[in-house]
Image (cartoon, rainbow, N blue to C red; front, side):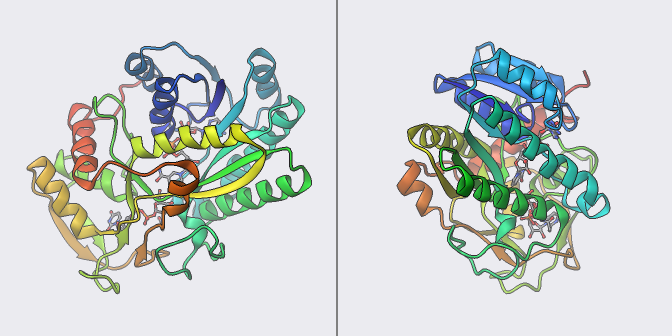
Length: 339
Ligand code: NAD
Ligand code: UD1
């Protein structure tokens, strides 16, 4: 079986390509290099020991997509490609709607017209919005997102639900990721943020390596055990393995399914700082500052549906997530080398 991985050179995509190839799938990668480096592709080959096809292509390029579908026998698409910086999306909403929503519509049209109707989509816990109480379950109402990035995820979910209502021969799996961190055990691939990281773990690892001075902890007055924000951190390799299971599910029968991919456990910002210090042996400078706009206090999953229906469960604990994040950062202090 051959899987087209859009955004396959990015953080989650690169780890997923390796697990797909380990599981015996053929992989075709598409990326436009907007937020990744060519070196990631070389390292995917090195770690998997397998060859795969790569197309430099934008998901908004209909001709480019048709060329791929006509050249390759694609059975299923895993769709990671998208812009993901929350703050940037507030400043550049049109770019986010064009790239994420417009790009997905073009991809879906190309799939339909080329006879491929199986897709696994990268959604986010952000679609649960501000009002639901954790543990978050797939049948809770979605909406109330606080920024254009989150709205693109919600809109794409709605588009896919409408598509399935119109044509029930599609297989559609919506995966709602919680907070992916960690890296491949080898320390060869990992998250390579552009500029100052927005997310907690890459910020911590850059403080640890001395690139940043001090972590700002956004608020200690939430209704949580230590007052700092609580999230459901999941090892990126566990997340990647969830995609392998989702592809199996999509191949079984037509249908539309939604799954949380999380561990079901919540850790606070200070828990993360302390776990990282323990795993790395490095002290993290931090200071408490005000809350970040749009943040919620607590967000963690109920992952039981994915366990029941996908036979998938996260295996890697917080210590392993911290060790693997640190190995990647230490071995690649400046991320991937430039092309
Ligand atoms: P990433 O930026 O590392 O990977 C996305 C990849 O898509 C990049 O390699 C980028 O170059 C490519 N891309 C972007 N726009 C494209 C386009 N128009 N055409 C072709 N390629 C394009 O991000 P990631 O962390 O690996 O996230 C993957 C997906 O998962 C994204 O859709 C993201 O929104 C979603 N997601 C991520 C997180 C997270 O915390 N990392 C959480 C929830 C959901
Ligand atoms: C953020 C995004 C969310 C996105 C997710 C994964 C916002 C409002 N939400 O969620 O849409 O799906 O990333 O990419 O940006 N923290 C600090 N200091 C920092 C960074 C973070 O204290 O420098 C805290 C946050 O307040 C939060 C926790 O650490 O409590 C995790 O933050 P982060 O990694 O940004 O993830 P989310 O807030 O869950």
